[in-house]
Image 1 (cartoon, rainbow, N blue to C red):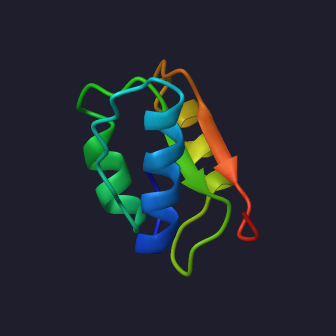
Image 2: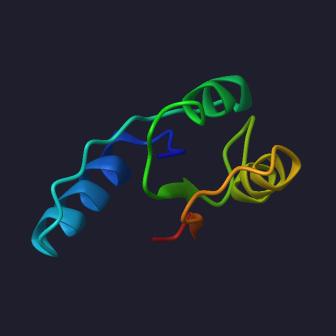
Length: 80
């Protein structure tokens, strides 16, 4: 999960659990950490639309550039 706010992280985690998922979440805030995590097994990538140093569009670009097959990046707006 590309996120910089612990409250948002908790809300997303609660919603996933309420929907019956058992998420194992790894949080990243910068591009380098995102790229390093792509080498790990992840089913879905959830990203805040814009952070100070990184954003969902850049996450999508990285996936495309590296030709990595992930389920996708789910951008979440800053307003919820």
